[in-house]
Length: 254
Ligand code: PEP
Image (cartoon, rainbow, N blue to C red; front, top):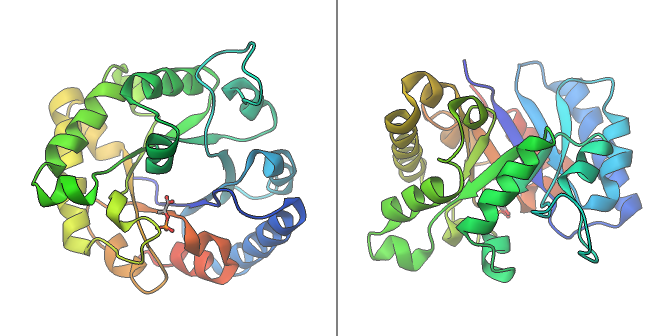
């Protein structure tokens, strides 16, 4: 049985107090309403991480993650935050390869390889994002793009390290647009990802890895998406900023 996960990506939203309030609301609803084995991860801005990590020590259902980490161990990188620092405050996850980082911060495969390695070295679980643009889908390159993103940044890992990852398929055209991939479109790519993993690492590794769908996922469409065989949950942007919506998505597993 793969772990079922809904991860929230707050992006650059919420000041410190707004973040604490939202997190408290989410944790309260989860404690009251979520009876299954699914888990929530909240990926907040760095400023919230320490406080949030301290608020979840009494529940195994909620964990905390960062949205980025620098690729170096330490040093003269003014304004940056290292994987070691993130882990030291109690965060367990880090989103890497999000399309907004690839697009606005020119993060490429080589850089992301270093980020994946250093995150694992500091006991952070990368939530590694992959996905094609609309242009790439329209020119039927989406399978090639997905494979390239896997090969260049995570297929160098040993099977043991690869098995620690969470993957997130996020078609760029569906992020923050209100346009969701249909459940069939998402399932097709998730099955393709699992097939590529099986070819590289074997069926057991492929069957064990959690693959999330991200892109305008909401309480209305989550159920149909999560019912698909190869979709193990969601990476949620906009809807993670509303406690009710986020927890309803978390409850959308069969
Ligand atoms: C995201 O940013 O990872 C995301 C999926 O955003 P949204 O849910 O808003 O499309």
